[in-house]
Length: 428
Image (cartoon, rainbow, N blue to C red; front, side, top):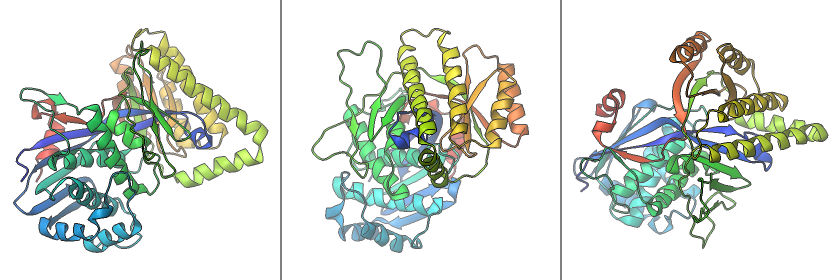
């Protein structure tokens, strides 16, 4: 029986540059967002597994004996290198009373937990008797990687409870992270959870949640941004196969990138949008006006690469002169995103409001509403930030002051957590 209580967290993600262009083979930069999902793992009464997800109204528990019996039906097929099969997921849906075709967050979150619990325990030992509570600072369905942060937390907790990875948090430490090899294993299993939830994800969100920092994504390859003076270090590429998983026969991992932590405002316009419809609209425009639209995509690609160069240079030389460049890249890219048809009046308003306070913003993710990010310089006054937040909230938007370039999945002592998190995790 698992005998320790643990608290761990994983960050969300935002796309800094390259949204939509990435679909057409261009570079995108994804960065870890320091709005985090927290998971508390503690021993449960012998012979029970409990999962509590207050954000989506889930409280479920099962006898471990029932889960082990269920697992025996297809244990040989569980592996982090294999995608969940339709038959496995159908069996789990029937077991959990989830309707076929159910797409509500609570159904998918429950299904992902069951799959990961059975799959990880099938490979590494018995189903552990644990009580898991997950609470998140991230809004769901906003394109901020909330499902990946959940999957990363689940993978780290279940692998630790089953003994597949060690618990690196020592007495007296406030936080700790796993080894590179263990992070690679966490990421592999988190990708399985993302496949349960999304079907065919890119793997970017769970990689950001695992390693943190900033990652470059292009044509199925994910690489961390280079560290300054990295000549003697080898940074591996996580090569994605057709379904997004690791290519067979290759041992690959990501070295956590050293990037600056940038202050931002994250604003949710609360305007719903369909990523599928927006992506199709961009494709239609490219087919209709290829000579006009392809140069715009090339320019977005150049923005991503210029931003990458700036971010890679900043840790070694954190000069204020970089911020005007980053702000101008935000402005140019936002205009490009409007040109390709993924803007929205709510996002135009967000940009106007922040510009009135001397700040620079752009949409992040699919566009058509959703979220925007506003860059804050180190010397931006607290009064200007508060005034901008007040005006954004007066528009009916939701606004957070946070940062990007955050650490990946992390173990915490209670002393390292703020009051809000401690209160949320104390709920039983």
